[in-house]
Length: 219
Image (tube, rainbow, N blue to C red; front, top):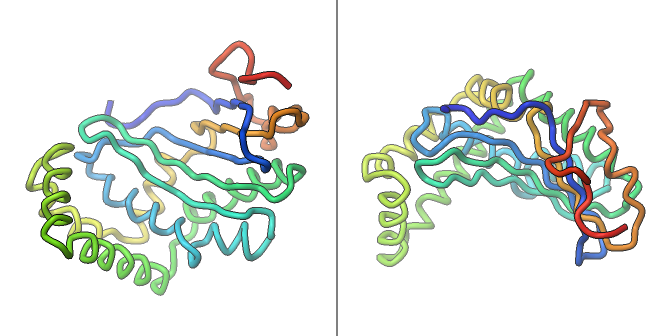
């Protein structure tokens, strides 16, 4: 189907090889051929980097995360996947982290981003497109990837379409695809730590596990 479907949120807790808990929230999205793909690329840029809303909220503001970022992966002609990852400083902040993330996405969905924010993201995406094709090898690689996952016309028109995305487009795709009720939540928890709080949905949704036991690995 055109849009990724998910009936209610999924939750999973897995053993981690890292010392700190890590959160991954993901959503099914669309293929690169879809008309909403450029707007989702803008949302990815909005939520990435040290000037992004998420970094200012989680790292600089609340001070509960060591890092945070977003990525929109697509498999060419197949539906894509939008993902937000963060590394907590304190395991006790897991519920707070999920609530803050949901609140920030709801704010983006309900309040248009500012002209200054839109300008920053456009400049960021334009600069990235130019610098990533500076050398002959990089340009050839870009063309090869573009025609592999789509076609040459896609490669020619993507940047203009991305730069034409409006604040209203950003609101629309967030409401359509980044719905909290359609998310997948994966907590990567240091082995040996208690898991009970990570299994609970802080929003009170009827979250389900994609497995009979929501935990992979032992407690």
